[in-house]
Length: 121
Image 1 (tube, rainbow, N blue to C red):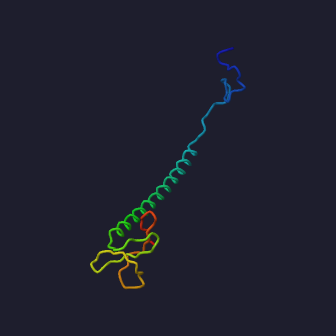
Image 2: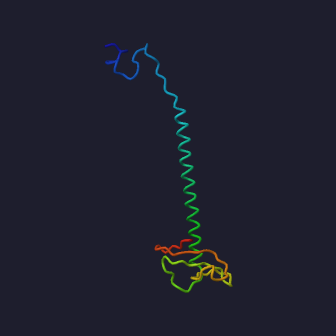
Image 3: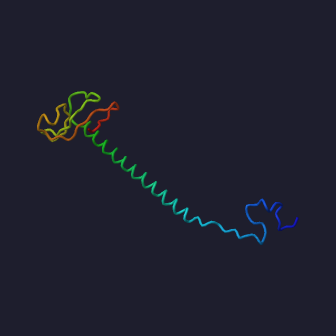
């Protein structure tokens, strides 16, 4: 066997002699660019979803903080609706009275979840 010949040249996936066609790598730039665009779009979408979720969480946190710091003289019941108002002293207070039953500045309506979290309704 000579130095320039493979044992089974017909079984090789490439040319094994000088007269065989040149091996040229495929141009994969198009594939790379398409992948970059797809991944960037996917990451951008995920980022926007996380940003929306974060902003929603911040809003929930602020409402919960406001309701828990407001004045009320009763123990709220899970699932019942409550109403947050501004009192004469400028401080927020929680009430059972619905906004259409009196003339007070209404900040929001809430219900207490089983996780002790105030849900704005």
